[in-house]
Image (cartoon, rainbow, N blue to C red; front, side, top):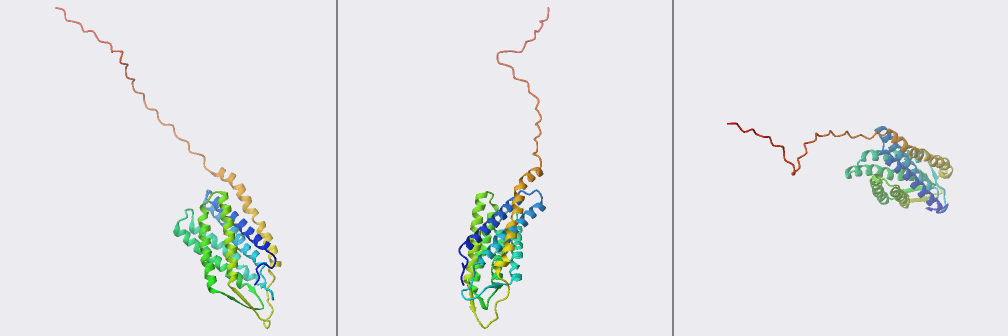
Length: 276
């Protein structure tokens, strides 16, 4: 199996798409912590799940698959089966974020990481299962197990990073998550063995490149919606914040009589002496 039949620029594009989608998703998570109501917080978390799950994960993996080919055969894909991860990953990431909640704790982080990591591993498996070749495909169980463990660790790091607030740290986390997701994808492909058989019927399905172009354009263009919402949200949030509480003036205490100075004495009353 060849990984870069179209050149290494596909790898760079995959990393860029993964980092961009993850960064916008992390900013949406940061924005959710400033929401006034639980309804707006859920909206921000849903937007984050779509950005990270659909664009930062599934679309980045699909970009990397554009350059995968066979030296003596064709690889087609069942688009209906390949569309499953597009719905699975956003749901899993949203579930993981809701499990973690506002205060990330070790037990909650572990539960959310298991949900997201298992979904990420299943996404890679479904992507391989959607491949159709003129022959047979086998998957190594050991490498699949290794990818699952790596996916859970990556998901744990992603959920832990949701507590970060600075833009530069979020950019660093996005780049690391992009490299991890694409790396897990190529590690999973290393455990795939394809045996061509000319006696079998030619592969069905469709070519991924022609079907992916409109999906890629719609997905990348949809990032403009959460980006615009983030730019508008600070002013809106500022108007929704309650006015600062004013302190009540403290009651004034009555002043005590000042002590008399040492140099003055109180006037003495004269006592009349009795006559006689």
